[in-house]
Length: 310
Image (cartoon, rainbow, N blue to C red; front, side, top):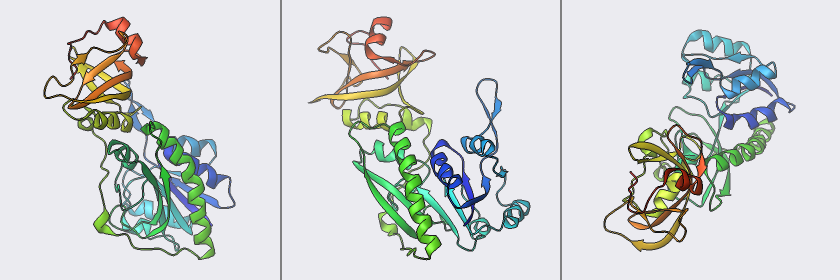
């Protein structure tokens, strides 16, 4: 099949790699325009654009997906199908252009976790299972008819970064199962049950700040769901302290002093009070410094029992 691929971040790379190495022809790649990045605000290419340049693929980086010029550029490619993996919301005239439609690979079991950050929110909410879904794109985001779904267990200590990479790899194989069905005319789309829908909105800074009055398990899941990027954070002596890994110690309930550092069974550990349970911080990063273990932090910053985080 002649395929237009649309995607931007690292998550899309395994799927695009499989397409490039397959019998299908990638006739064009649509990705986000270069964006200013870093202190110098130098223009930075998306991971998908970098990969596409390395493989001499035809690249489109439209600022506005609704422009006629972009539509006619895609039409000239005469695609059979468009494949979307982590991209922007498409206008109807774009997703309805190919005769076989436009399909999307989504990292959740739709209709659960519709939106930009399904992997993050599954972890933040303490889910033990997630999955992959392929579906036909329709007007409303993530509401299209389902083609295939695959349930996947979330490992007990798995972080966003780890689960992201695992789903990206599994997603490439899963996408090809879908392409085989479409090519053979055997895809049998089914409607989503919209009553079961849940949101997975874009992660913002507010989602990262730790509220120590929550239960330790909730905070641990927040840390897992945002590690390594953008990272959950708290304040220590007025400066940001990013936290990448933590574990729950006990089930003791507290009525006050949330975020207070308490006595641990080892002077090189960091234990903090929560509403229910103590959270042990095991990997963190002080503002302006490198990532380090709790032991390194305790030795360098001399954090003491009674000091408060947050």
